Structure formats: structure tokens, C-alpha cells
View 1 (cartoon, one colour):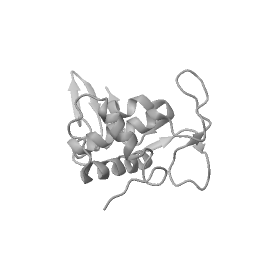
View 2 (cartoon, helix red, strand yellow):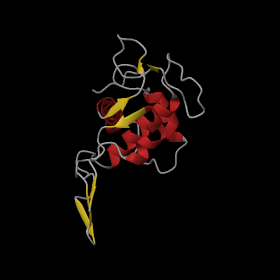
View 3 (cartoon, helix red, strand yellow):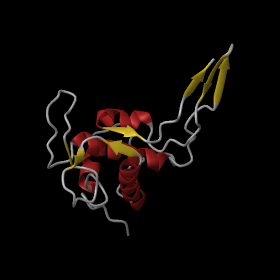
View 4 (cartoon, one colour):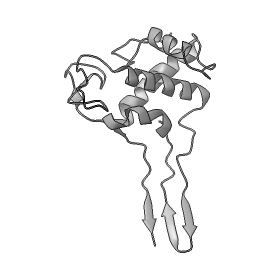
Length: 154
């Protein structure tokens, strides 16, 4: 049976996730079953492997990328290096919900070619494992590695 362990395979506890979803509309897919637990763990794995985080790990011995040092929030206040910000945990929850509702490994990432009167736009149609709308609240702390390689030519 899958077990969520905060700081080992998840940024947040299952209790945090349940509390978060109790106050979120349109979260009917989240429940207390095994698929939700697995999705929470998978969301953390994606955030670990598909994001290049700014700053540095708070400790060389920690398992996950968070907590981190050398970061500030949107108001230029230092992010505590001994805790994982709630917004990171909430983003993990949102990504878990996304995983429950659609497999991120099966979603195409973009348009291959658009041509407008000699202006040609190519994108690499890589799969998008973390949607931009889910990642946006924490984008100032890292870069998605799923971003397509865009080219604009004439």
C-alpha cells in the first residue's frame, strides 16, 4: 500500500491535502482512496524531476528538493529555509488533482507548426507533465523543464 511520508516522498502530508481540498471547489475527484494517495506521491515526483529549482537544498542530507535556501517570496521576504511553503504544498495538491483527472504522460504539449504568410512558428510537441496553470503560483522559484523549444522564423 502506498504511504505518503512528508519530507521523503511528498512535500505535504495527506492531512494537509485533505484540508486543502475541503476548501476548494471542483475537487470532487479527490478522495481518501489509494488513487489520490498515489497521485500525491506522483505529483511530488514530477515536481522533483521536471522543475529546476532556484536556490539550494537547505540540507545536503534531505531527500527532496524542498526546503530550500536563498529564496524570497513575491514580496521580497526571505523564504524560511526550515519549512516548505504552503504554496508549494498546494501546488503539489493541484498537480495531484490534475493527475487524477488526466494522465500527464498522455497529454500533448503543443502545436508543431503554424504558418502565417511567411511567418512560421514551430514548437516541439513534447508532452507537458506539469501544466503551466498549475505551476504558475511557484514559477518564480523554478523553471519547468517541460517547456517546449519554440522557434520563430521568417
